[in-house]
Image (cartoon, rainbow, N blue to C red; front, side):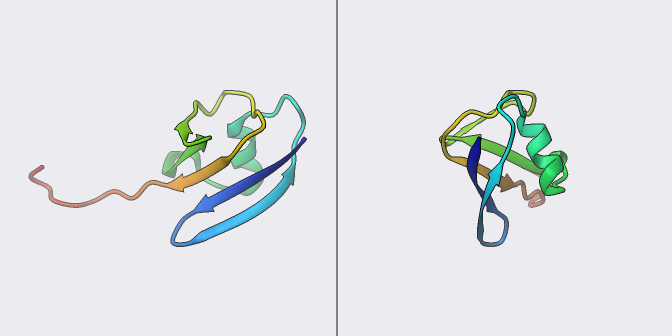
Length: 72
């Protein structure tokens, strides 16, 4: 199955990829060499568990930024 992936990390990078019908989002991150501990995967705008199978739709990978006020 062909999927379009948007990677949002200091800009937007779009990539068309071919994955098998039983691939998971975790396997997608492995293919892209992205550490799953520093991103959130969105499918049609909603967060998805990494062990879910990929389904057609808009897939975005959003890098999580941490930091800020230590007193909050």
